[in-house]
Image 1: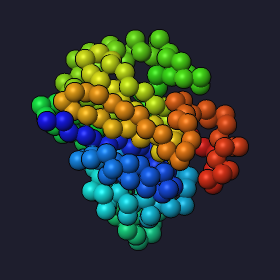
Image 2: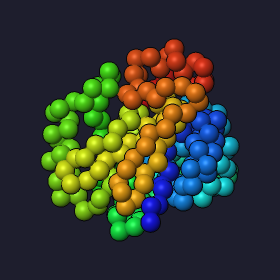
Image 3: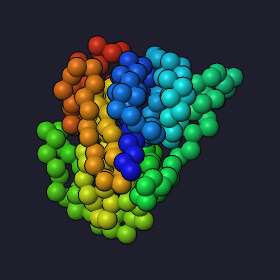
Length: 217
């Protein structure tokens, strides 16, 4: 039996793209939703994003912006969003239809900062990076690795594992559906915009004015 898993990442406290992704997942019969971190950061709708994730029973892991949010408000009482973030694990593991899946924000085993960056700014595969991760993941004991953090969209077999980055719902305008046990991934656009395979941080000052937020990576 085919099981569909919805994949999202790097929501960055902007709720509209997240809401659209969740609607797509519901329409496509997705059974499980996974978020590879960075619910917080940049936008001003963290509580709305957290409510959407909670209502959808999405499995969420910790990203660097989530950790920074908790550090920034460490002297303040926790609100609903902070309580949600504080409970997030660094990794998630699950087995579906005989296939094992591991999710981490940056890279395994538990990094939230060292991301799997495979593409250059023009979305061309960087051969040296592919060779490095091929070697690094050669004996990785999972069938699928889901990552976020780099604001890149890719589906690549590296070493012995299928590596998927669904991209940022905000910056890449994308989400993904993973079908198991077939190991098929469909990248889906959001917001009526073409998917940006590799977000160019040099453009953030101009592009992000439409959504609001500061100018850091």
